[in-house]
Image (cartoon, rainbow, N blue to C red):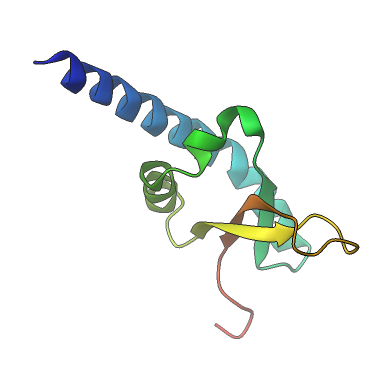
Length: 99
């Protein structure tokens, strides 16, 4: 195995482990949002882990772990005064109430 392969495997394992911990920790929050009648939840992305939280591997793993909940990265405006300034957030949604 080359050094490149070892590094890629280590990165992949780290992202998959992070996805598993994230999914376990976010389930109670999603349940709380559902109890409040909501069908989606926005989750802030801290800059320290942005490279993990926005990676396609992380998004794919979390979507698989949270069966039926769609998680995606979206951009929202940070200010009404400057609507063109946006930040990335995770959006977890589980359909609408007419389903």
